[in-house]
Length: 327
Ligand code: UDP
Image 1: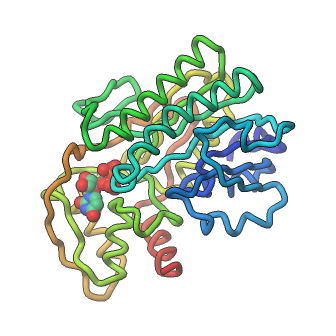
Image 2 (image 1 turned 60 degrees about the vertical axis):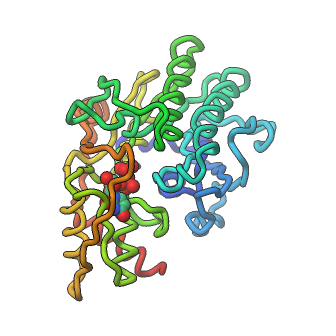
């Protein structure tokens, strides 16, 4: 990885460290010589995701709610060099089940962490995990960072997408007016090992159905599209973004620009097994479900020299293997 040396000996505060993406970040950061303090309230994260890290001397796990001030859960002499704010439910069924926790962790916790930086640790670099959902049901395709989005401010997804948008606002204010080095990564659909088989997103959901010999649940007619990025590619992009100098206040999309309909997604997952393929069962499309989504990653390619490398079939095979071993 480029900029590897940036992380050696750095103290990282990683919120959402027991989550899907957080646990992969923790693992790679430790391998680069960083000291990682992972904080998670385990609402949707799981200690199982970090069990293999608990014996690593530079890893520490703290069960806490990051809407509280860091001073309530961090040792007073611990000042992080970098804060990665990844705590949040991320799957539509789960954030809709926990709407208040979702909007608080993306808005209040972002504010709280940034105020901690302003008052206690002004040189700390801060990365906010935002989302492609800030583009809502996009009317521009593919979605570039300059697009303002098309979001229902009071719909069933707004506890997540509007809270991420407010989180971005809070980062922007701190970067511009308070000179904090905040950066925003807009993460497009990501998949891989350590997703929760029950989290309801399309890839784990189809894999769960595959393993349980149930039909695939296709919402709507299955012609809506998503673009799926394997987690190791995403982590590589995130770390390049954090390590690069001179990107205070920047927003960058990270995702895989290869776009697939949900029907194609079902077919690719069916093709992973040789036994009887699951049938397709059609269900109503949930409200405000975006019709198309594909990242324009030219900014990441230019500023970070980053491009995803893992092919969909390859990534899905790894993911299925994880679920098969885990179930
Ligand atoms: N989807 C589906 N069947 C499922 C789960 C999801 O057809 O069992 C569709 C969903 O309607 C959406 C797409 O797959 O159009 C991606 O959904 P997901 O929940 O993974 O994430 P989103 O990109 O909507 O946040």
